[in-house]
Length: 512
Image 1 (cartoon, rainbow, N blue to C red):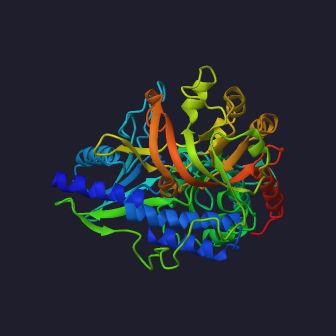
Image 2: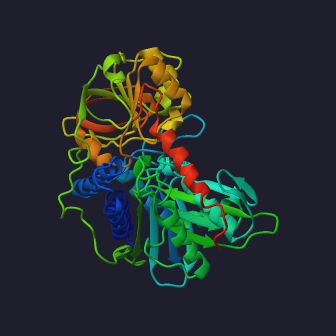
Image 3: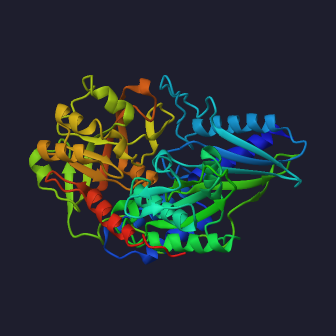
Protein backbone atom coordinates (compact mmCIF):
# COMPACT_ATOMS: atom_id res chain seq x y z
CA UNK A 1 0.00 0.00 0.00
CA UNK A 2 1.12 3.55 -0.71
CA UNK A 3 1.39 4.87 2.85
CA UNK A 4 1.62 8.53 1.84
CA UNK A 5 -1.64 8.22 -0.06
CA UNK A 6 -3.26 6.42 2.87
CA UNK A 7 -2.14 9.16 5.25
CA UNK A 8 -3.64 11.78 2.92
CA UNK A 9 -6.91 9.82 2.75
CA UNK A 10 -7.04 9.63 6.54
CA UNK A 11 -6.22 13.33 6.86
CA UNK A 12 -9.19 14.06 4.58
CA UNK A 13 -11.45 11.73 6.57
CA UNK A 14 -10.57 13.41 9.87
CA UNK A 15 -10.96 16.91 8.41
CA UNK A 16 -14.33 16.08 6.85
CA UNK A 17 -15.59 14.51 10.06
CA UNK A 18 -14.56 17.53 12.13
CA UNK A 19 -15.83 20.26 9.81
CA UNK A 20 -18.75 19.01 7.71
CA UNK A 21 -21.88 17.36 9.13
CA UNK A 22 -23.21 14.37 7.14
CA UNK A 23 -26.32 14.72 5.00
CA UNK A 24 -28.57 12.60 7.22
CA UNK A 25 -27.68 14.67 10.30
CA UNK A 26 -28.38 17.92 8.44
CA UNK A 27 -31.81 16.65 7.41
CA UNK A 28 -32.62 15.77 11.02
CA UNK A 29 -31.64 19.27 12.17
CA UNK A 30 -33.74 20.84 9.43
CA UNK A 31 -36.74 18.77 10.56
CA UNK A 32 -36.21 20.01 14.12
CA UNK A 33 -36.05 23.63 12.93
CA UNK A 34 -39.32 23.23 11.05
CA UNK A 35 -41.05 21.74 14.09
CA UNK A 36 -39.89 24.42 16.53
CA UNK A 37 -42.12 27.31 17.58
CA UNK A 38 -41.00 30.61 16.08
CA UNK A 39 -39.84 33.38 18.39
CA UNK A 40 -38.57 31.09 21.15
CA UNK A 41 -35.12 30.67 22.69
CA UNK A 42 -35.06 27.16 21.19
CA UNK A 43 -35.74 28.58 17.72
CA UNK A 44 -32.93 31.10 18.19
CA UNK A 45 -30.63 28.25 19.23
CA UNK A 46 -31.47 26.20 16.16
CA UNK A 47 -30.81 29.23 13.95
CA UNK A 48 -27.40 29.60 15.60
CA UNK A 49 -26.72 25.87 15.08
CA UNK A 50 -27.63 26.12 11.39
CA UNK A 51 -25.41 29.17 10.97
CA UNK A 52 -22.57 27.35 12.70
CA UNK A 53 -22.89 24.41 10.29
CA UNK A 54 -22.56 26.82 7.36
CA UNK A 55 -19.53 28.57 8.85
CA UNK A 56 -17.72 25.36 9.71
CA UNK A 57 -18.08 24.02 6.18
CA UNK A 58 -17.11 27.33 4.56
CA UNK A 59 -14.10 27.85 6.85
CA UNK A 60 -13.08 24.16 6.89
CA UNK A 61 -12.84 24.57 10.66
CA UNK A 62 -14.18 22.46 13.53
CA UNK A 63 -17.94 22.41 13.98
CA UNK A 64 -17.35 21.99 17.72
CA UNK A 65 -14.18 22.87 19.60
CA UNK A 66 -14.31 19.59 21.54
CA UNK A 67 -12.42 16.92 19.61
CA UNK A 68 -13.59 14.33 22.10
CA UNK A 69 -11.86 10.99 21.87
CA UNK A 70 -11.32 10.06 18.19
CA UNK A 71 -12.63 6.53 17.72
CA UNK A 72 -11.91 4.52 14.56
CA UNK A 73 -13.58 1.29 13.49
CA UNK A 74 -11.54 -0.37 10.71
CA UNK A 75 -12.62 -3.31 8.54
CA UNK A 76 -9.81 -4.92 6.57
CA UNK A 77 -9.49 -7.76 4.04
CA UNK A 78 -7.44 -10.74 5.14
CA UNK A 79 -3.75 -10.04 4.59
CA UNK A 80 -3.84 -6.23 5.00
CA UNK A 81 -1.14 -4.94 7.34
CA UNK A 82 -3.06 -3.44 10.27
CA UNK A 83 0.13 -2.09 11.86
CA UNK A 84 0.65 0.17 8.83
CA UNK A 85 -2.92 1.46 9.16
CA UNK A 86 -2.39 2.19 12.86
CA UNK A 87 0.76 4.17 12.09
CA UNK A 88 -1.01 6.09 9.29
CA UNK A 89 -3.93 6.96 11.57
CA UNK A 90 -1.56 8.31 14.22
CA UNK A 91 0.29 10.39 11.64
CA UNK A 92 -3.00 11.82 10.31
CA UNK A 93 -4.23 12.63 13.82
CA UNK A 94 -0.95 14.40 14.59
CA UNK A 95 -1.10 16.42 11.35
CA UNK A 96 -4.77 17.45 11.62
CA UNK A 97 -4.15 18.57 15.19
CA UNK A 98 -1.17 20.65 14.06
CA UNK A 99 -3.39 22.22 11.39
CA UNK A 100 -6.13 23.11 13.95
CA UNK A 101 -8.69 20.69 12.54
CA UNK A 102 -8.71 19.06 15.99
CA UNK A 103 -8.09 20.51 19.44
CA UNK A 104 -5.22 18.85 21.35
CA UNK A 105 -7.34 16.76 23.68
CA UNK A 106 -5.25 13.84 24.98
CA UNK A 107 -4.37 14.23 28.65
CA UNK A 108 -2.26 11.95 30.85
CA UNK A 109 -4.68 10.56 33.43
CA UNK A 110 -2.14 10.76 36.28
CA UNK A 111 -0.17 13.93 35.61
CA UNK A 112 -2.83 15.90 33.73
CA UNK A 113 -0.28 16.83 31.05
CA UNK A 114 -1.64 17.40 27.56
CA UNK A 115 0.33 15.55 24.87
CA UNK A 116 -0.39 18.38 22.41
CA UNK A 117 -1.14 16.12 19.43
CA UNK A 118 -4.13 13.94 20.44
CA UNK A 119 -1.84 10.92 20.81
CA UNK A 120 -1.19 9.00 24.00
CA UNK A 121 -1.59 5.65 25.70
CA UNK A 122 -4.65 4.08 24.12
CA UNK A 123 -5.39 7.15 21.98
CA UNK A 124 -6.79 7.42 19.45
CA UNK A 125 -9.07 4.40 19.87
CA UNK A 126 -8.68 1.94 16.98
CA UNK A 127 -10.80 -1.19 16.68
CA UNK A 128 -10.03 -3.63 13.85
CA UNK A 129 -12.17 -6.33 12.32
CA UNK A 130 -11.39 -8.56 9.34
CA UNK A 131 -13.88 -9.29 6.62
CA UNK A 132 -14.03 -11.01 3.25
CA UNK A 133 -14.61 -7.88 1.16
CA UNK A 134 -11.77 -6.66 -1.05
CA UNK A 135 -11.61 -3.09 0.26
CA UNK A 136 -10.94 -1.34 3.58
CA UNK A 137 -13.67 0.59 5.38
CA UNK A 138 -12.66 3.10 8.05
CA UNK A 139 -15.27 4.72 10.24
CA UNK A 140 -14.57 7.67 12.55
CA UNK A 141 -16.63 9.34 15.27
CA UNK A 142 -15.66 12.46 17.20
CA UNK A 143 -17.82 12.37 20.32
CA UNK A 144 -17.23 15.32 22.62
CA UNK A 145 -16.89 15.18 26.38
CA UNK A 146 -20.16 16.98 27.08
CA UNK A 147 -22.24 14.26 25.47
CA UNK A 148 -19.86 11.47 26.49
CA UNK A 149 -20.43 12.41 30.12
CA UNK A 150 -24.17 11.86 29.64
CA UNK A 151 -23.70 8.23 28.59
CA UNK A 152 -25.44 5.97 31.08
CA UNK A 153 -25.73 2.27 31.82
CA UNK A 154 -28.56 0.49 33.60
CA UNK A 155 -28.54 -2.92 35.27
CA UNK A 156 -32.00 -4.46 35.19
CA UNK A 157 -34.08 -4.76 37.25
CA UNK A 158 -33.81 -1.26 38.71
CA UNK A 159 -35.86 1.63 40.04
CA UNK A 160 -35.98 4.74 37.87
CA UNK A 161 -36.95 8.23 38.97
CA UNK A 162 -40.35 9.09 37.55
CA UNK A 163 -40.87 5.69 35.94
CA UNK A 164 -40.72 3.23 38.80
CA UNK A 165 -39.52 -0.34 38.41
CA UNK A 166 -37.85 -1.38 35.15
CA UNK A 167 -37.86 -5.16 34.72
CA UNK A 168 -35.90 -7.53 32.50
CA UNK A 169 -38.15 -7.17 29.47
CA UNK A 170 -38.82 -4.86 26.54
CA UNK A 171 -40.84 -2.51 28.72
CA UNK A 172 -37.96 -2.22 31.19
CA UNK A 173 -35.66 -1.41 28.28
CA UNK A 174 -38.15 1.24 27.12
CA UNK A 175 -38.10 2.89 30.54
CA UNK A 176 -34.29 2.94 30.67
CA UNK A 177 -34.03 4.62 27.27
CA UNK A 178 -36.60 7.28 28.16
CA UNK A 179 -34.81 7.94 31.44
CA UNK A 180 -31.47 8.29 29.61
CA UNK A 181 -32.90 11.17 27.57
CA UNK A 182 -34.39 12.85 30.65
CA UNK A 183 -31.15 12.69 32.65
CA UNK A 184 -29.12 14.26 29.83
CA UNK A 185 -31.21 17.46 29.92
CA UNK A 186 -29.34 20.21 28.03
CA UNK A 187 -25.89 19.20 29.25
CA UNK A 188 -25.23 16.96 26.25
CA UNK A 189 -26.05 19.73 23.73
CA UNK A 190 -29.57 18.64 22.93
CA UNK A 191 -31.28 18.03 20.63
CA UNK A 192 -29.23 14.85 20.41
CA UNK A 193 -29.00 11.30 19.12
CA UNK A 194 -28.70 8.10 21.14
CA UNK A 195 -27.24 4.69 20.47
CA UNK A 196 -28.49 1.87 22.70
CA UNK A 197 -26.87 -1.48 23.41
CA UNK A 198 -29.00 -4.23 25.00
CA UNK A 199 -27.13 -7.11 26.63
CA UNK A 200 -23.46 -8.00 26.72
CA UNK A 201 -21.32 -7.06 29.69
CA UNK A 202 -20.49 -3.57 30.92
CA UNK A 203 -17.82 -2.92 28.29
CA UNK A 204 -19.30 -4.74 25.29
CA UNK A 205 -22.69 -3.15 25.98
CA UNK A 206 -21.20 0.33 25.64
CA UNK A 207 -19.30 -0.74 22.52
CA UNK A 208 -22.57 -1.94 21.00
CA UNK A 209 -24.29 1.32 21.94
CA UNK A 210 -21.57 3.42 20.29
CA UNK A 211 -21.65 1.16 17.22
CA UNK A 212 -25.30 2.16 16.71
CA UNK A 213 -24.18 5.76 16.22
CA UNK A 214 -22.63 4.72 12.89
CA UNK A 215 -26.06 3.79 11.53
CA UNK A 216 -27.91 6.16 9.21
CA UNK A 217 -30.35 8.44 11.02
CA UNK A 218 -33.13 7.43 8.62
CA UNK A 219 -32.59 3.67 8.47
CA UNK A 220 -35.04 1.07 9.80
CA UNK A 221 -34.06 -1.53 12.37
CA UNK A 222 -34.36 -5.06 10.90
CA UNK A 223 -35.87 -6.22 14.21
CA UNK A 224 -39.55 -5.22 14.11
CA UNK A 225 -39.84 -4.77 17.90
CA UNK A 226 -36.74 -2.59 18.04
CA UNK A 227 -37.85 -0.58 14.99
CA UNK A 228 -41.11 0.17 16.79
CA UNK A 229 -39.26 1.08 19.97
CA UNK A 230 -36.85 3.42 18.15
CA UNK A 231 -39.75 5.34 16.62
CA UNK A 232 -41.62 5.45 19.93
CA UNK A 233 -38.61 6.76 21.87
CA UNK A 234 -38.01 9.70 19.51
CA UNK A 235 -41.68 10.64 19.43
CA UNK A 236 -42.09 10.36 23.20
CA UNK A 237 -38.83 12.11 24.13
CA UNK A 238 -39.94 15.12 22.11
CA UNK A 239 -42.91 15.57 24.46
CA UNK A 240 -40.62 16.11 27.47
CA UNK A 241 -40.13 19.81 26.76
CA UNK A 242 -36.37 19.73 27.36
CA UNK A 243 -35.69 21.18 23.93
CA UNK A 244 -32.60 22.53 22.24
CA UNK A 245 -29.87 23.33 24.78
CA UNK A 246 -32.36 22.53 27.55
CA UNK A 247 -34.18 25.83 26.92
CA UNK A 248 -37.51 24.04 26.50
CA UNK A 249 -39.11 23.38 23.13
CA UNK A 250 -40.21 20.74 20.67
CA UNK A 251 -36.88 19.14 19.70
CA UNK A 252 -35.21 17.06 22.41
CA UNK A 253 -34.16 13.91 20.51
CA UNK A 254 -33.32 13.63 16.81
CA UNK A 255 -32.59 9.92 16.53
CA UNK A 256 -32.57 6.62 18.43
CA UNK A 257 -30.78 3.46 17.25
CA UNK A 258 -30.91 0.20 19.21
CA UNK A 259 -28.76 -2.92 18.96
CA UNK A 260 -29.01 -6.19 20.86
CA UNK A 261 -26.61 -8.96 21.78
CA UNK A 262 -26.71 -12.03 24.00
CA UNK A 263 -25.89 -11.83 27.70
CA UNK A 264 -25.30 -14.13 30.64
CA UNK A 265 -28.28 -15.02 32.87
CA UNK A 266 -26.99 -13.07 35.86
CA UNK A 267 -26.59 -9.72 34.05
CA UNK A 268 -28.96 -7.56 32.02
CA UNK A 269 -27.45 -4.25 30.93
CA UNK A 270 -28.97 -1.45 28.91
CA UNK A 271 -26.19 0.90 27.77
CA UNK A 272 -26.88 4.28 26.21
CA UNK A 273 -24.38 6.39 24.25
CA UNK A 274 -25.64 9.96 24.00
CA UNK A 275 -24.43 12.16 21.14
CA UNK A 276 -24.94 15.90 20.75
CA UNK A 277 -26.50 17.64 17.74
CA UNK A 278 -22.94 18.08 16.37
CA UNK A 279 -23.05 14.45 15.27
CA UNK A 280 -19.57 14.16 13.77
CA UNK A 281 -19.17 10.74 12.23
CA UNK A 282 -18.02 9.73 8.79
CA UNK A 283 -16.71 6.68 6.96
CA UNK A 284 -14.77 5.91 3.79
CA UNK A 285 -13.93 2.88 1.67
CA UNK A 286 -10.24 2.68 0.78
CA UNK A 287 -8.35 0.79 -1.91
CA UNK A 288 -5.96 -1.59 -0.06
CA UNK A 289 -3.40 -1.39 -2.91
CA UNK A 290 -3.24 2.38 -3.42
CA UNK A 291 -4.60 3.85 -0.17
CA UNK A 292 -6.99 6.07 -2.15
CA UNK A 293 -10.56 6.80 -1.07
CA UNK A 294 -13.03 4.86 -3.21
CA UNK A 295 -16.27 6.00 -1.61
CA UNK A 296 -17.61 8.34 1.08
CA UNK A 297 -20.45 7.11 3.29
CA UNK A 298 -23.58 9.03 4.39
CA UNK A 299 -23.88 10.71 1.00
CA UNK A 300 -27.37 9.48 0.12
CA UNK A 301 -30.22 11.96 -0.35
CA UNK A 302 -30.48 15.72 -0.22
CA UNK A 303 -27.79 17.85 1.39
CA UNK A 304 -29.28 20.69 3.40
CA UNK A 305 -26.97 23.69 3.14
CA UNK A 306 -29.09 25.95 5.40
CA UNK A 307 -28.09 28.79 3.09
CA UNK A 308 -31.28 28.86 1.02
CA UNK A 309 -33.21 30.69 3.73
CA UNK A 310 -30.36 32.99 4.70
CA UNK A 311 -30.32 31.74 8.28
CA UNK A 312 -29.64 34.61 10.66
CA UNK A 313 -28.33 33.57 14.05
CA UNK A 314 -29.40 36.78 15.73
CA UNK A 315 -31.87 37.69 18.40
CA UNK A 316 -33.88 40.13 16.32
CA UNK A 317 -36.77 37.79 15.61
CA UNK A 318 -36.89 36.17 19.04
CA UNK A 319 -36.89 39.05 21.47
CA UNK A 320 -37.52 42.77 21.52
CA UNK A 321 -34.80 43.53 24.04
CA UNK A 322 -31.15 42.59 24.03
CA UNK A 323 -29.15 43.74 27.02
CA UNK A 324 -25.77 45.15 26.03
CA UNK A 325 -22.99 44.43 28.53
CA UNK A 326 -19.36 45.56 28.65
CA UNK A 327 -16.93 44.26 31.25
CA UNK A 328 -16.23 45.16 33.97
CA UNK A 329 -19.90 44.66 34.86
CA UNK A 330 -21.45 46.16 37.98
CA UNK A 331 -23.55 44.29 40.52
CA UNK A 332 -26.42 46.66 39.73
CA UNK A 333 -26.35 45.63 36.06
CA UNK A 334 -26.31 41.95 37.01
CA UNK A 335 -29.19 42.24 39.45
CA UNK A 336 -31.30 43.88 36.75
CA UNK A 337 -31.13 40.69 34.66
CA UNK A 338 -33.63 37.87 34.91
CA UNK A 339 -33.99 34.36 33.50
CA UNK A 340 -34.89 34.51 29.81
CA UNK A 341 -33.06 37.75 29.05
CA UNK A 342 -30.73 37.76 26.06
CA UNK A 343 -27.43 39.56 26.53
CA UNK A 344 -24.78 40.70 24.09
CA UNK A 345 -21.29 41.09 25.52
CA UNK A 346 -18.59 43.31 24.06
CA UNK A 347 -15.13 43.76 25.54
CA UNK A 348 -13.00 41.36 27.53
CA UNK A 349 -13.71 37.85 28.78
CA UNK A 350 -11.44 35.12 30.12
CA UNK A 351 -11.65 31.40 29.48
CA UNK A 352 -11.56 29.02 32.40
CA UNK A 353 -12.22 25.29 32.57
CA UNK A 354 -11.48 22.49 35.03
CA UNK A 355 -7.77 23.15 35.61
CA UNK A 356 -8.26 26.91 36.02
CA UNK A 357 -11.07 26.50 38.53
CA UNK A 358 -9.09 24.00 40.57
CA UNK A 359 -6.05 26.30 40.46
CA UNK A 360 -7.97 29.42 41.52
CA UNK A 361 -9.33 27.74 44.64
CA UNK A 362 -5.86 27.91 46.21
CA UNK A 363 -3.99 30.56 44.17
CA UNK A 364 -4.34 34.19 43.21
CA UNK A 365 -5.69 34.97 39.76
CA UNK A 366 -3.11 36.04 37.15
CA UNK A 367 -5.36 39.00 36.23
CA UNK A 368 -7.89 41.22 38.00
CA UNK A 369 -11.22 39.40 37.64
CA UNK A 370 -13.36 41.87 39.56
CA UNK A 371 -16.50 42.55 37.52
CA UNK A 372 -15.29 40.28 34.75
CA UNK A 373 -16.72 37.39 32.71
CA UNK A 374 -15.45 33.80 32.81
CA UNK A 375 -16.16 31.66 29.74
CA UNK A 376 -16.23 27.88 30.21
CA UNK A 377 -14.42 27.17 26.98
CA UNK A 378 -11.44 25.17 25.73
CA UNK A 379 -10.81 26.76 22.32
CA UNK A 380 -9.04 25.47 19.24
CA UNK A 381 -6.09 27.83 18.78
CA UNK A 382 -3.55 28.40 16.01
CA UNK A 383 -0.81 30.91 15.29
CA UNK A 384 -0.89 33.17 12.23
CA UNK A 385 2.07 34.06 10.03
CA UNK A 386 3.15 36.77 12.49
CA UNK A 387 3.11 34.30 15.37
CA UNK A 388 -0.03 35.71 16.97
CA UNK A 389 -2.67 33.44 18.48
CA UNK A 390 -5.97 33.16 16.60
CA UNK A 391 -9.16 31.40 17.64
CA UNK A 392 -10.30 28.67 15.24
CA UNK A 393 -13.23 27.34 17.28
CA UNK A 394 -14.63 28.43 20.63
CA UNK A 395 -17.96 26.99 21.77
CA UNK A 396 -18.88 26.50 25.43
CA UNK A 397 -18.08 23.45 27.52
CA UNK A 398 -20.45 21.77 29.98
CA UNK A 399 -20.52 23.89 33.12
CA UNK A 400 -21.71 21.42 35.75
CA UNK A 401 -18.15 20.10 36.18
CA UNK A 402 -17.27 23.41 37.83
CA UNK A 403 -20.11 23.23 40.37
CA UNK A 404 -17.78 22.41 43.30
CA UNK A 405 -15.74 25.58 42.63
CA UNK A 406 -17.82 28.18 40.83
CA UNK A 407 -19.61 29.97 43.65
CA UNK A 408 -16.50 30.21 45.80
CA UNK A 409 -14.41 31.55 42.94
CA UNK A 410 -17.00 34.17 41.96
CA UNK A 411 -17.06 35.51 45.53
CA UNK A 412 -13.28 35.31 45.96
CA UNK A 413 -12.44 37.29 42.80
CA UNK A 414 -15.57 39.37 42.22
CA UNK A 415 -16.57 37.64 38.98
CA UNK A 416 -20.01 38.82 37.83
CA UNK A 417 -20.89 36.52 34.94
CA UNK A 418 -20.15 32.96 33.93
CA UNK A 419 -20.82 31.63 30.43
CA UNK A 420 -21.14 27.94 29.60
CA UNK A 421 -23.73 25.38 28.60
CA UNK A 422 -26.11 23.06 30.39
CA UNK A 423 -26.50 25.10 33.57
CA UNK A 424 -25.15 24.67 37.08
CA UNK A 425 -26.46 23.45 40.42
CA UNK A 426 -27.81 24.74 43.72
CA UNK A 427 -24.44 25.76 45.18
CA UNK A 428 -23.75 28.10 42.27
CA UNK A 429 -27.35 29.37 42.25
CA UNK A 430 -27.06 30.29 45.91
CA UNK A 431 -23.77 32.12 45.27
CA UNK A 432 -25.30 34.07 42.36
CA UNK A 433 -27.97 35.31 44.74
CA UNK A 434 -25.60 36.18 47.57
CA UNK A 435 -22.85 37.72 45.45
CA UNK A 436 -24.77 39.26 42.60
CA UNK A 437 -23.83 37.06 39.68
CA UNK A 438 -25.44 35.51 36.65
CA UNK A 439 -25.09 32.34 34.57
CA UNK A 440 -25.31 32.75 30.81
CA UNK A 441 -26.03 29.79 28.54
CA UNK A 442 -24.29 29.87 25.17
CA UNK A 443 -25.18 27.47 22.36
CA UNK A 444 -23.23 24.23 22.76
CA UNK A 445 -21.33 23.09 19.69
CA UNK A 446 -21.58 26.49 17.98
CA UNK A 447 -17.81 26.80 17.86
CA UNK A 448 -17.60 28.76 14.61
CA UNK A 449 -20.38 31.17 15.51
CA UNK A 450 -18.66 32.16 18.75
CA UNK A 451 -15.18 32.18 17.22
CA UNK A 452 -16.51 34.82 14.83
CA UNK A 453 -17.48 36.95 17.85
CA UNK A 454 -13.88 36.88 19.10
CA UNK A 455 -11.96 39.71 17.46
CA UNK A 456 -8.60 39.17 19.07
CA UNK A 457 -6.53 37.30 21.63
CA UNK A 458 -5.02 39.79 24.07
CA UNK A 459 -2.98 37.35 26.12
CA UNK A 460 -2.85 33.98 27.81
CA UNK A 461 -1.97 32.73 31.28
CA UNK A 462 -1.31 29.31 32.78
CA UNK A 463 -0.29 27.69 29.50
CA UNK A 464 1.30 24.90 31.53
CA UNK A 465 -2.20 23.42 31.73
CA UNK A 466 -2.33 23.02 27.93
CA UNK A 467 -4.22 24.93 25.25
CA UNK A 468 -7.77 23.84 26.21
CA UNK A 469 -7.24 24.52 29.92
CA UNK A 470 -5.23 27.77 29.76
CA UNK A 471 -6.75 31.16 30.63
CA UNK A 472 -7.15 32.98 27.32
CA UNK A 473 -7.84 36.74 27.29
CA UNK A 474 -10.41 37.29 24.56
CA UNK A 475 -11.61 40.52 22.96
CA UNK A 476 -15.22 39.92 21.91
CA UNK A 477 -18.00 41.76 20.10
CA UNK A 478 -21.71 40.98 20.31
CA UNK A 479 -21.20 37.66 22.06
CA UNK A 480 -24.79 36.48 22.55
CA UNK A 481 -26.06 34.23 25.33
CA UNK A 482 -29.22 33.65 27.35
CA UNK A 483 -29.65 34.24 31.09
CA UNK A 484 -30.68 30.87 32.51
CA UNK A 485 -29.69 31.42 36.18
CA UNK A 486 -30.11 34.87 37.71
CA UNK A 487 -29.22 36.62 40.97
CA UNK A 488 -32.77 36.25 42.32
CA UNK A 489 -32.71 32.48 42.85
CA UNK A 490 -34.26 31.52 39.52
CA UNK A 491 -32.93 28.69 37.32
CA UNK A 492 -34.39 27.73 33.96
CA UNK A 493 -32.46 24.45 34.20
CA UNK A 494 -34.13 23.49 37.47
CA UNK A 495 -37.53 24.44 36.05
CA UNK A 496 -37.06 22.37 32.89
CA UNK A 497 -35.76 19.42 34.91
CA UNK A 498 -38.84 19.49 37.12
CA UNK A 499 -41.33 19.83 34.28
CA UNK A 500 -39.65 17.18 32.13
CA UNK A 501 -39.65 14.73 35.05
CA UNK A 502 -43.39 15.24 35.38
CA UNK A 503 -43.82 14.53 31.67
CA UNK A 504 -41.54 11.50 31.89
CA UNK A 505 -43.72 10.08 34.65
CA UNK A 506 -46.72 10.13 32.32
CA UNK A 507 -45.05 7.26 30.41
CA UNK A 508 -44.55 4.93 33.37
CA UNK A 509 -47.35 2.61 32.25
CA UNK A 510 -46.53 -0.33 29.99
CA UNK A 511 -47.01 0.33 26.27
CA UNK A 512 -45.47 -2.81 24.73
